[in-house]
Length: 325
Image (cartoon, rainbow, N blue to C red; front, side):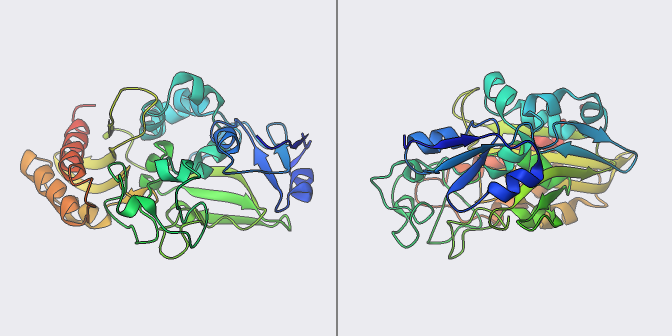
């Protein structure tokens, strides 16, 4: 690991003033330290922002605001999250391990990088790590790779479970740019698809910082579920995950939210499937047809066609589980 300078800013303004192209913010460090050990990220300075940014969660009638440095485990068990936004807690508890959840921060979760094995192997070509070098995964071992939204420049997937729930619930991200201007970014626009610039994971401006995440009040707290399929029960990232939430009037679906992890470069919303569900009766047939619709939108690679059956099963199960909570 390259030697670095460690600074602990006392507030957000000081942190922003010290941020430049050779420095990085660090919270829990659950991803950044891995990247530094693998020599993928080699900052000259680490700016520890754990005391500089908010570590509180505040709920109102209209929304909940989660501070940038609130730990994932704290979010998952918060009383307001459990009662008003349970999908978030379910997604977080499906991720990583208790040890990692106790360290990982809200902002850090949004900014974590892909776990594609070729990204972590600096001896291989990776456009995300070194733009223009090629994508080894495209014709290599792409079992874990994307089945939708990928480009020939990159087939990596976003690793977060927390972010899948945030995408489903139309969250927003509040940031401060380098000039200390506050900006709000809709969550659906925060992460991006690879296209021709896979090195860019998100739309966060250079040297800006995440201040908080807001989730608007919704009617999905009674009927929601998170299903995650992976190779083992802990310390494993999703092959496919599905966050599902329904607003019901009796057995009629008034509104629906569906998002997936493990399938794309960003948390993926199934907008057309959501539209299909609206106005339908919540039934085995409806859920089966919805899952079939999602599968038809995919474009698997040579080594991950098996994900289609996983996606279909996970979506069907998640929708069914919405009725049994």
